[in-house]
Amino acid sequence: MSEAIRYDLLLVGGSSSNLILAHRLLDLAKLSGLKISIAILEKARQFGGHIVSGAICNLQVIAKLFPDFQSQGFPHEGRVEANHLSVLGSQQRWDLPEAVIPPGFRKQGQFILTLSHVIRWLAETLQEKAKGIPNVTLDVFPGFAAHEILYKGERVIGVRASDSGQVYEDCIFAELTCFGDKGFISKDLIEKFQLRPNPQLWSVGVKEVWQIPQSLQGQVWHTLGYPVLDGSFSGGFVYGLKDNRLALGLIIGLDSKNPNLNPQQRLQEFKAHPWIQSLIAGGRLLKYGAAVIPEGGYHSLPTRFGVEGALLLGDALGVLDVGSLAGVDNAMETGYLAAGLIHDGFLKGDLRIQTDYQKAVMESAVGQNLYRSRYFREAFLENSRLLEEYLPQVCRSVDAGHPWLGSLRWGLQDPVRRGRETLRAYTLLTGRVSPSEPPPRGYVAPHAAIQADFVAPTT
Image 1 (cartoon, one colour):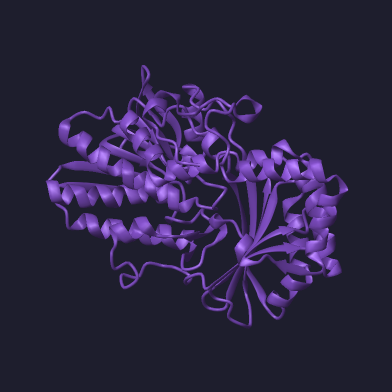
Image 2: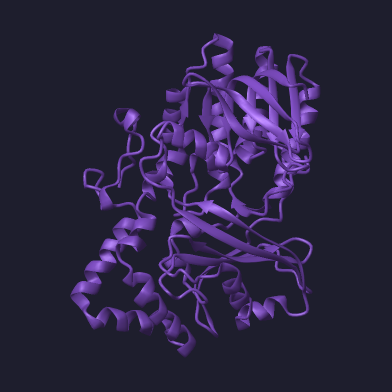
């Protein structure tokens, strides 16, 4: 790198949103003849090197970009063949009947992904694609981290980047900069322009991947209950991967009231459950990791999805839908939507696309689903008894062999209040609260700038 380099478009972070954006933009530029220079910064020495997440994804965006993605070698761990939502007591497991599993947790037919493999494949295929488009210049810089945003007045003009193995720094300038990661760089942008009126809600995910004797490929469990029964928002997961591997872990809300909650220790307790022990018996640990997850959803969205010279995408924007566990799906969609607007903006010589981008995201399935799930986390914040009293009682009933009885006993303790609480929780979890009803805890509408143009889904 030279001391100062200029590009038309700079993508900060080798995220799924940025890489999908780049793929879509190259496809459009090939058709239109748009001459454009693109740079991608990635702090890891290899694309995907810092990503430990797994995902279950519908791959609609991948199918639009790569209609034959399976024959093209797109990496996945198989389709979901059996999907379970389970309540764990300390000794037993209860799989909820299919009829009562929320729609967002029904994942049959979707693809199980190891995200680091997906990112590496997207980066490699992107570089190959660029070789066949002479009007596109694509430079990738793995091992370079952006650590400061550069401004000219109130306009973003690039970033200052450094090689983590060297002491020198480089200024990279661009007409438009896109931030796709949830790191401190995108946080700095949000804080400078005071874009997020409601705080982001964070969880931490701790995960292990095991080699096991038997194949559980396509088997998926999401769990509630043991070992986190102190009222903290949490859940477990077990994904059967190809090649006799198993991914398991816990996701725990960092807004827990318990200051002594240790996610790594709770993961060990999760593994000690008799059911988990039966799955990993005779196996060996391959790798482990942890990551923070932005779960605030709709009410934690920024008021603006970009500023002059910059856009926020994916995790930087905060589009994970906790009500359906859709994070990668939504992040990819933001990149796909941004690409079309960026392409047209460069063709017209007008990159004032921030408002159009925000409107496109909010009117897409991403915005509609985030709106439906807007009070999912609030249901548990508003009534702590759901996790502090009701869930532990059900878990004890699971161990006693009669899970439905635990629910009945909880309801009979105070049928009027319990009925009212259950109905309230249901309306919050499913988004059936009237759009005109004042939101809990005085939330500010995050997209007030486009409120008149946003059509709320029918509830």
